[in-house]
Image (tube, rainbow, N blue to C red; front, top):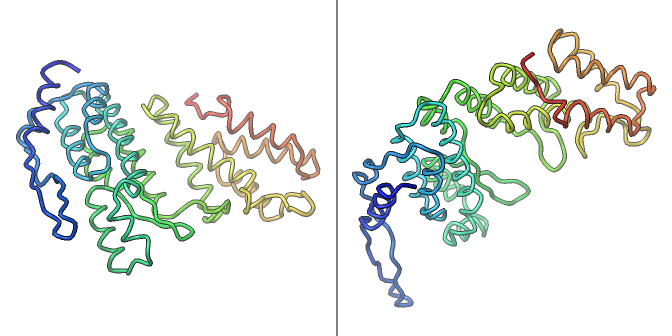
Length: 303
């Protein structure tokens, strides 16, 4: 990071207004940030992902205000669209890190959620967190946070490339309906097929997308679940190791409805393999999945 940017960032935090509230119960006090000098933030013009990452490294991931600062620094960037995509990747990583650690770092919030919180408490927390682009969800009785893709699309999409906007649009739709939980697929076979085709289309349209690896991972996850199921949603009967009739019907329907797609070719080859195996699960199934779905050779390409 150049010297001028370093000085501006230092000035930013030195210029924050602090107050020192007193706790009359234990006579301790702590500093809390009440406002941030937005004028000084506006003077910072970061142009590279490296500079932006170094700037975010100075922020406190336990303070939601840091997300606002990170967002302003991103929007102030004078980089071109493709570089902005790369800078936004850094912002997205930062937001994920904040979401992943905030509950651990914020004792007050942890206490509010830890002892049978009321619906009012949960809704208030959800509203507060959502204003920073973070969703409060629960699973198996535990709360967790994750970035809201619709928030990212609405607030940052105009500064991103068409590829990144499309990536966020697909992700935001999928976020509305959880894909799996506890090793079980929660969506229908048709919905799973739709997700496979959405990511195939995306990868064909944008093979040079800056986060193409994430898109490929999504595609592979859904294709693998469609072809093999999950621990508690198997396509093979656990007693007989035979392919379930419902899964065979889904495969045949996918091939019929999507002729010419790369995914349809994979499903067709898979069904042909299973026919040779009398639709019985063997190690050849795993080998097929590793080669055609989860390896580099299984990646969707624009041919």
